[in-house]
Image 1: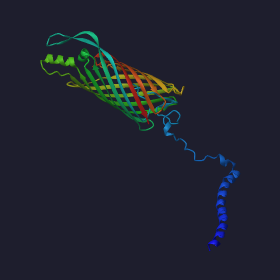
Image 2: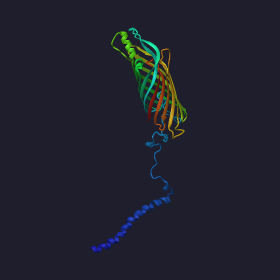
Image 3: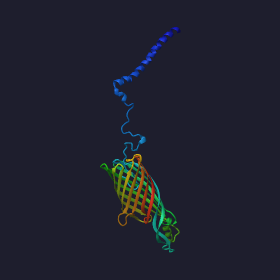
Image 4: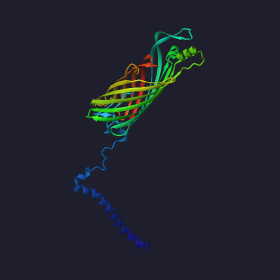
Amino acid sequence: MARALVPAVLLLLPALALGQAAPEAKADSAPAAATALDPGTAAKPAGPAAPAGVVDPRTWGTRETEWKSHRELAGHVFIPSFIIQEPFSQTSFGLKFGFGSGSATGPSLVWTGNPSDPLAPGPDKDYPFNALGFGVNVTARILEWLSARLLIGGDAYLGSGRDSILVIGTQVKAAADLGVMASFPVGEHFRLAAAFDVTYGPAFNVLVAEGIASAIRDGTANVDVLNRTSTFTWIPGLLGAWAPFPFLGATLNLQFVHPSTTETGTSSFSQNGWSLAGAVDFDLAPLVPAVPFGVIVAYKLLGPLGSTGVTRTDNLDFGLFYTGRKDLALGLEFDLRWFHIQSELASTGTTVLFTMRYYF
């Protein structure tokens, strides 16, 4: 029986081999036949093309993508400054932190020995101080033309040295700003906006010399050196931006300022003022892509309206920013400020600020 099966198996093996080879030959010949009938078959892509408009996440926000920033106008991506409000409807999150120093000019103190008037002003002198500041900015784009923002920040001034601590003392201010803005393009190179902000800010002043003088004058041992104020400020304004070239932009702010202040132990009082601010920024990246940096120069003037208006304040700001990404503003700002500490001491300060803002 076994001997009879061997020749049968040997005869079936070639048939099985031919049966397996035939489909392979047919599969191998199919592409050749298709290529001969349709010469363009070989040039077709192997897989489906990527959908139009899809951005590689690794290049999101870079200048090589087609993503358009909401702070972009006529090909120019505007560089921000902490003293300028941008007239763009956008969504962003920003941080700033700074430190600085300066000097305040005020009268020297002369102890008279008279209980009714223990301190008398002497010749003017300069008192040094140190300063700190911080801020958080959250802006939300509600519609193409409408946005809202929340700004929380604060600053502090501390007299440096014995005489400065007595005269300048310590001043700490905090503020919360809530605002809305309506923004519209005007042609290709201009954008205008109307904004309305409400700011609330408490301030704490530690006046050492004044507290000691009051204690001597009143004949008490209680030295009250803390003065507290609370201020509501209404700020309507008009904003504008102009981009004549992809590497150059200008921003302008014009605002009315109306603060109402309540001081501890006294009644409230109101003031009026106006603010004019302008900035010019230059971005080198559109001209030299290998150097993605830009600079901004900004100036802001806060002036009084009427004889009892706000105290004048001037800011001159210089900024250096990285501009390699449309969705990121990262830089250093150098601010020169002329203002008044305690509303009566003419002061000059220099502050260095680290600024970061991410746009969504």
